[in-house]
Image 1: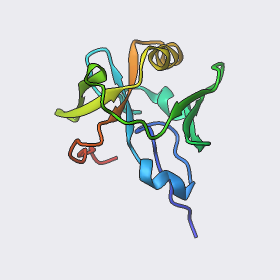
Image 2: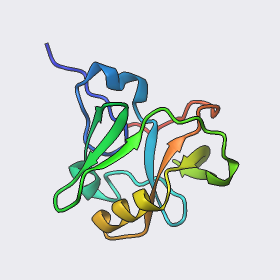
Image 3: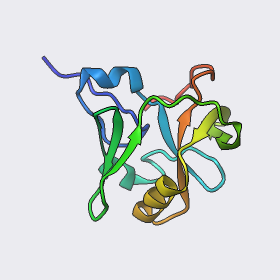
Image 4: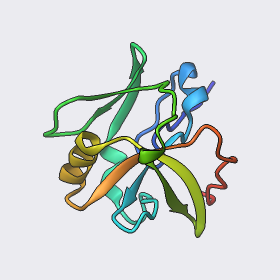
Length: 129
């Protein structure tokens, strides 16, 4: 039987952990124009390893320190809300902050941010793979 893979960060490496099903494509990386980056635009995304550990989304990449991001944070601070663009459609998201943006930008060698789909946002219509 082939395991099912989940992608907590859209376009980054997938994991076969069934606990990840609840977090499938909850995060995405956007460029400085708020557009979602896919592997087609940024192949290096596939090398970002993601897993879940002790209530955190854990990110690892070659040459980078491990980064832990709390999974279930109450999204009640409007100052970190923004709009991302996925396949031409606006998506309500929450910015994960400067530290995470610096990590992602340094690894991808371009200005980027990690954002999480807001829990009150309608489902994202991801383009076919």
